[in-house]
Image (cartoon, rainbow, N blue to C red; front, top):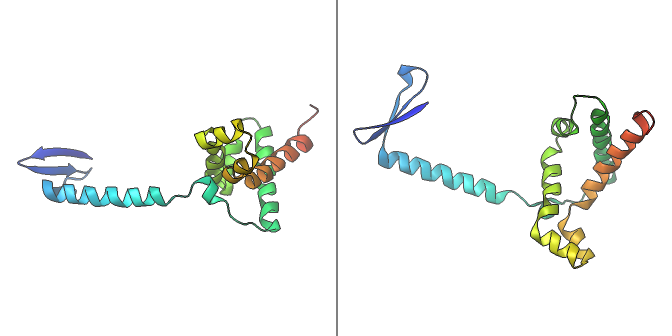
Length: 146
């Protein structure tokens, strides 16, 4: 798709000439501002890992351990990634967000000042422990001799 300015208008040519879209500049600006506003609302609505923590049942934690075991099993197989398995199993985004909190200034300050209560409040530790336990169990049981 290309965008050209011609006679005060934006022309967007798609692959097919019959699909030309011509917008006046003010219309284009209005559409662009609406799209940006919706994007900002969507990104602002995303929860941080601390807010993302939710009360889980024992059954859900067992499911997380099993997903971790699948990730660990895939780590053993050459060419297969545990991250890919996390993506397939639907825990990738929460895993990345939970790990990302470790580098946040708020978490680092809590660690340096030994504020254990704040560390557990900030970090999605229940989720990380459940997944890590599954990975460790799988690595220890499925890999040949360490």
